[in-house]
Each structure stands twice: as C-alpha cells, then as structure tokens.
Length: 332
Ligand code: NAD
Ligand code: UFG
Image 1 (cartoon, rainbow, N blue to C red):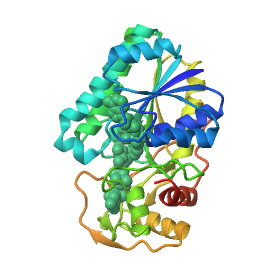
Image 2: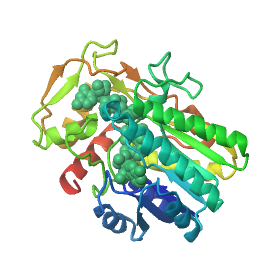
Image 3: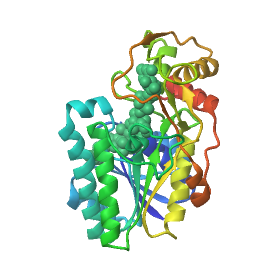
C-alpha cells in the first residue's frame, strides 16, 4: 500500500515507519520537524535499507497535503502529527487546538479532496480521564482534564461525526497507553527537546548522569508501593499494532476505538528497578510531591485489540528499558 504518516519523523511515527517499510509498503513521511530532526531519515534507511519519501510541511497546509496525497496515490493515512505535552497545553491551549484539532480538520479536508478515506488516528488513554474502574476498556466514559486531552477527545468526536455523515470512511482511533523503549538497533527512539516530562526518557538521562536524580511524583497513592502505576508498552509492539490495525481496517468501514496497551501496570519504582537492571547504572531518586493532574493508576483492558486485530504486546519491561538505554548511548 501507499501510506502517508503525518508526524512520521517523530518518536512513534518513525517506529511505525520501520514496521511498514519492512512489510513492503511505500511510505511517505509528512512532518514539519517542530519536534523531530532530519537525521531520523538516514536512521530509517540504515535500519530498513529503504528510503521513504519525506515532505517537510505542516498538516495545516491543506493544499500541499492534498497534492502530496494525490501525487503519491496515498491509500491510507496514519495521523501522528500533533503536540503532546500536557503541562505545556495548560499554558498554551491555542497551540494545542491549532496543531491538533485544526491540523486534523485540514488533514480530513485534504483527504476528502484526494479521495482517501482510510485513517488511523493516534489517540490516547488520556481520554478516559480519572478511571472509574480498571482495567480501562473502550466502553469506559470519556472525559478530559487538560487542553491536550480535550484536543484528543474533540478529534475522536469529529472523526465519529464524519464517519456517520459519510459511511465510506474507515477510521480507527488507537488509544495508546504509555509508549516506552526504542527500536532494538538503538538508532531511533524518544528524544524530547529540553528536560523530559515523561518518566522513561527522564530515567534514561539520570542513568546516563546527564540529570542528577529522578523526582518520584508522590508515594502516597493507593497503589502497592504508593507510586503511580501505568501501562508501559514497548514502542515496537505499538508499531506492530498499527500494522495490524491497517490490515483490519481494510475490511471494517466506520469508526472504531481500540486500546493499545499491555494490560499490565507497573509503578514508578518498578520502572526505576527495571532500568537499573537493564543499564547496570544507578538511578538516584527522591520522593517529591504529587504532580497536578496525575491519576493513581491507569492500565488497559487489551482484549478488544486481541479479538479484533489479533494483536497483543509481546515485549516486556526489560526490553523497553534495554532498548531505551541503547538509544540513550547510540542514537540520542
Ligand atoms: P513526537 O512529538 O515525537 O512526534 C510528533 C511529530 O509530529 C513530530 O515529528 C513533529 O515534528 C510533528 N508535528 C507536530 N505538529 C505538526 C504539524 N502541525 N504539522 C506537521 N508535523 C507536525 O510525538 P510522539 O510521541 O511520536 O506522538 C505521536 C502521536 O501520538 C501524537 O499525536 C501524540 O499525541 C500521540 N500520543 C503519544 C503518547 C506518548 O506518550 N508518546 C501517548 C498517547 C498518544
Ligand atoms: N513520573 C515521575 N517523575 C517524573 C515523570 C513522571 O514520578 O519525572 C511519574 C508520573 O507521576 C506517573 C508516571 O511517572 O505516575 C508516568 O508519567 P508520564 O509523564 O511518563 O506519563 P503519563 O501517564 O502522565 O502520561 C502519558 C503521556 C500522555 C498520555 C498518557 C496516557 O505523557 O500524553 O500517558 O496515554 F496521555
């Protein structure tokens, strides 16, 4: 297939590109590089031996995007492009609505213009808000507690409306839990600009000695060791989930939401212990106050992905930490 990845040079998109290129698809990466670097392209070639097409442009450039979709006879779009920092979204909400919501409207208009109606959207478990029950299945009520989450929720609703209005659309919102780790080569991975907000890249930089210590945000949650519990999923498992979703979507018109998680929750201290083991480095930490907006525990019911897509996560915590450490030393 001819597949376009908006935001394809970023953390998740670049790993999905590897899986799609290795499966023999023709891949177009469409990215404005606001949170990624051109160096990713050479790394993708090094890993796959194939050269994806790269277009540096913004998803809000509707005409450019429509032309690219037509020029490359794109049959399906995977939409990763967007901003994703929760804290920043509270301070700059308009940036989030402009990039995420307006960016998606622009993409949908370009797709309509080009006659492409197959879409995989990067959703997030953040749309479940504060869990009413665990594990989280797709029927759990949806809510948002910050502009980033609200942008994801708006987009899901918009996509559902569009599928109702025009039954030719095939749309799946993949609700990611906590992506972690890197490609096994260590050549691509998560490289946040500035000080990381997320746990795994922060731990990697503490282990490397680039940051002094980890602040563990709260140890008085109602969890086994008091620290926050999350469903960390290896980014290559996540990438394979996209390939499975794409194959499935061809046979399933309409709008769908599917969790991509492991079903297994790990605490912050579990992650520190796993990273220490994988890197053979100390990860000094101190207990700090809770971070505003954090929930105690969040993990998936991954049953629908298995039933529908025939996909489940295969890689464990040590592979996540080991590959993240390799990327920290080789790729970052
Ligand atoms: P990332 O920042 O590494 O990748 C996003 C890419 O999109 C970047 O390369 C960036 O340059 C590009 N981009 C941003 N705005 C753009 C625009 N207007 N036009 C063109 N390109 C643009 O982020 P990621 O971790 O790979 O996340 C990908 C998607 O998955 C995002 O939509 C994010 O919200 C979602 N998601 C991520 C996580 C996570 O923890 N990483 C969890 C749930 C959902
Ligand atoms: N944590 C720390 N110290 C840190 C960073 C994080 O203790 O320096 C803790 C958090 O309190 C939380 C856990 O580590 O308990 C995970 O935090 P992350 O920031 O890595 O991830 P979140 O679960 O808060 O959020 C992530 C993405 C969101 C996405 C959500 C659900 O950042 O975009 O997963 O998919 F919406």
